[in-house]
Each structure stands twice: as structure tokens, then as C-alpha cells.
Picture (cartoon, rainbow, N blue to C red):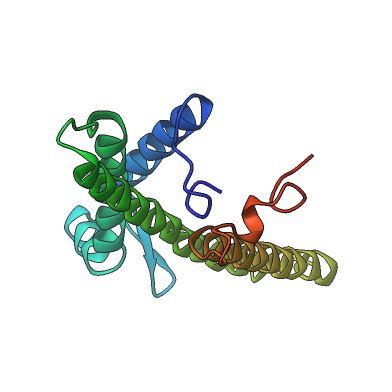
Length: 176
């Protein structure tokens, strides 16, 4: 919503954005001391935990956290008085960082992996089927959401000869 319709993050959305960033920051910090399974055994050695995190999710997590911090900094402290060109550059940078924050969805692959591990723990056939059905439903919902947001972003960026796009018409793109 925020990325495709280029909406400023204010009010309640700003609060949720800050809470989301704090959650991911806490997750980033806890990953440095959270054990992992290796060949079926829980590994709790701090040097091995750190190396494992550095070699798996550390770089993507750090990149996304930096995008979050950059987006917050530009959103809250980026109001420059140097003219419209600088403000347009700031808005473009905010848009890029908002888009990169969407990449957090890739982190949901961990949830799918955990669901698969849970279902392999000797659950009944019915429960396993329910877990796999949830995975399929979740994947379809995420895919549909991304497709809809992509079309809204395209509709917002492209316009016809009249200068309007389908998003600008009252009967489209608005929830009544």
C-alpha cells in the first residue's frame, strides 16, 4: 500500500513502521546468540553461531535494517528547504527504501521452513495436510498481494493523454 501508492508514512502508520523496525532490530541482535541445528544437533557454540549467521542471513538482514533506518531518517528529518529538486530526490530515495523493505517477505521463507520441520515431526496425516494447506494459502495470498501492488504502482506511474491513470478515477483504486 505504502510503496505502490506512494503514501507518506504518518500517524498510526508511522508508529507501526517504527515498531516494525524495532522488531527487526531485536531479531537482528538475537540472531547473534540464537543456536541453530546442524546435522540434527542443536549447536550453541557462540563462535559457530556467529559464523553461521554471518554466512547465511546477516548481510540481507543488515541491508534491510539500513533501509529501514534510511527510510525513517529521510521521512522524518529529510525536509529540506533547498528547492523542489532536492525534495524530489528525497522522495525517490524514500520510495526505493520502501520498496527494499518489501524484501522482508523473503524472510518469510524461514517460516515456511519451520512449518515443514514441524510437519515432519511425526504429525498425523490430517495435521500435516492442514499445515501444507496453510503454506499454499499463505503463498497464494502473498503472491496476489504483490501482483496487486505492482499493478497499482504501474497505474500510479503511468498516465494517459489526459494526465490521469485508472488509479485516479473515483470508481477504481478506492475502497468505499
